[in-house]
Image (cartoon, rainbow, N blue to C red; front, side, top):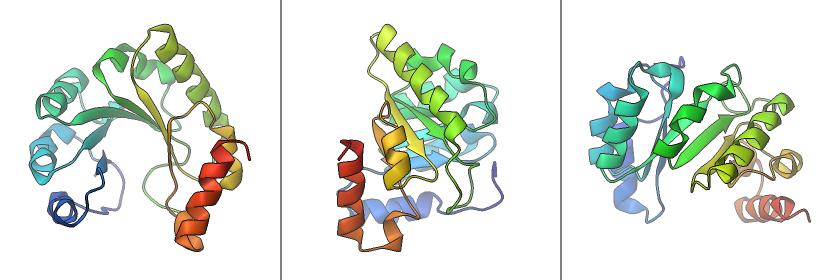
Length: 178
């Protein structure tokens, strides 16, 4: 594992795919993701995101994911330089910017990661690419406003602390600046 805990594996993704019409966005926080890509493709992942520093063959992994009919993504940990993903922007559908250290929920948002989001947005727009920016970690009503250059926000702990419908509505409104 790239992180000390394992949340769900390919069998759980397969089971979820059977009961949910929602797209499944799978973040592989593992070393050598090339060993597991096929399992997650077969399980029904719609999006498959790997860590840029977890493999020696980033392009090969991204190609396998896309050839499998799945959207491919790269993840930036807080300590990983933005320059590591820039060469691959034309090979991905998504860049995931982690605003906490990956692995455990409930951590505080790292505001210094906002610069990565801004740089990514500028570079994606400059190259006229169709790449989504996803942000994961410490997302709540206040931090969602800081991520205005992102396309997708992942809010785990915050969403499940209150009434689900109300919390999601609050997050959507905060994205709009309300």
